[in-house]
Length: 265
Length: 248
Image (cartoon, rainbow over all chains, first blue to last red; front, side):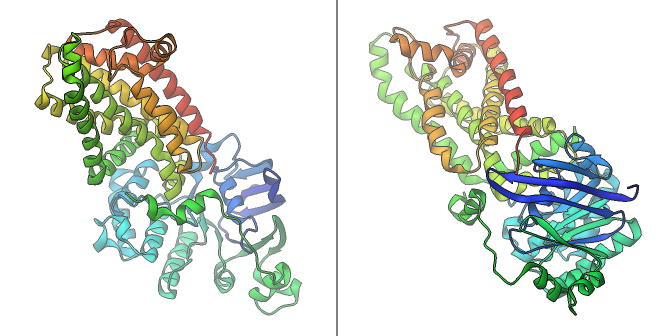
């Protein structure tokens, strides 16, 4: 138990009569790069939201960095950084201001703040654009900025919900190299979701596969392939989850997000 | 303090950068001042009420603070929609600080708005009775700003999207404004209307503001101040509580 930085026991999350996550249990060891895979609507994002205190679980025992997510929220929040699946930047602020805001609310000391923001902005190739409003950025640029922002405060655990979605291979590799470096040098635990199986295969030390709210596979890439008698992770993923295409119901927020132009002032 | 300041600064920057919003929210009070002020001025004077512009201006100042504050509070929904709310809610910062920063930001922006309308009113014909009372007028603006930013935040915390916004506008903000004594004196009113005006916190804020600017107050500063202070405190607590309960 000692070196399990994330501990999930019998987690269930229900939305009215829909069970998004159904009695799952798993552990993530400190210093691991843990991939959480599953088709659309499998319960990945819901699980991440619960681990990061954005949602309360219906039942179950969940500990992050040995703090309880139910009643030690602030301690839990101190422990992690997160890159969300969908945008969470302030469009009306500049790239630099977004970074600075994050550094301030995460209490990064002033002298480290400037230096680290500069380093990260240069790292993602947006230093020249630091004073531009984020609303002028392309999708890929926003994504990079979002990842850089999640790294400012060097958290113990980094949650990445489909971090490389929509990025070109160059940027993807570049970012993974940096994340792996952080993982090694700072012993930062990485918890990520992705739809790119070869990415998970390449970087993850351990993989869990979730489908329809249940965990249906858990182990190293090698173990999963062996268990399913397949050659690639993609094949074992498809063998475990089936080939049927999933529908994800969109919430009213997503509908609004789609209509965002209408609301632009 | 750093966190509260960062949130405050964000609100202020957003406001100053959206030129259309500034223009729009000055145009409306200006229209009210001109249309009502000059439209009803003659009748008001004939009825023995004195200068209507002087009566009206504090009401319109209060209106512009009210609208801007309410709107800034409701911006929580926008933040939810654009995802920025998540960024603040996963941070290791107490919800109370977030609420405080947001509310102070909203209040600052709305007071700024109120001050602009005050300056316009001076040009149109408002005569300040006693310039030494200006800080008191400012204080009432601060209260209106904080009170309605908190109310807007409280409401927005319970809403997922903007669909309910027209409802809030028509059934809450407009009645609060129209039935507050901002536009007409609260005398000789039918009992139900009088009752509503008496339980409307804006009534006391407008009365306090008018008292400070023109020297004519219906309820007296003590009552005005007490009511507005207590309601602001209560709404701030309710707003903080509902905000802390947001689930994403």
